[in-house]
Length: 125
Image 1 (cartoon, one colour):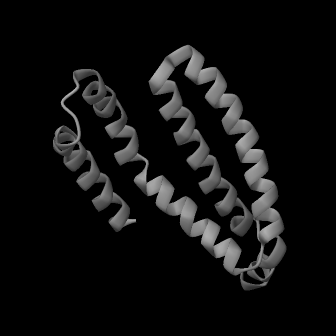
Image 2 (cartoon, helix red, strand yellow):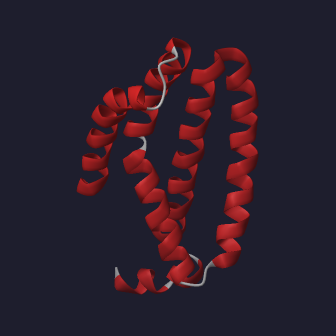
């Protein structure tokens, strides 16, 4: 988590100044500066989503991972379609944030409910 916060800070500051290394176009820089907060602030969410995915894969919980990803994708695509039309570029970033948050929640949910390969957790409490 600390690494995620560190990465969040480095990306927020680095992309703000580093974006000028790649383009001088004012419109592109404007879009980059709109997207930087989303990229930086979602790093801890992304890190947790990947950790929970890895834990569930390590427990051979592939069926849950597949079904939950399909459900997350359906919800996220609906959000993407609605938000991109109503809020444009920012709506796309909000939809991507929803997508990663749902992935994180789905991974945590499986472990937290002690279902599937995680049933042994009920005996521990």
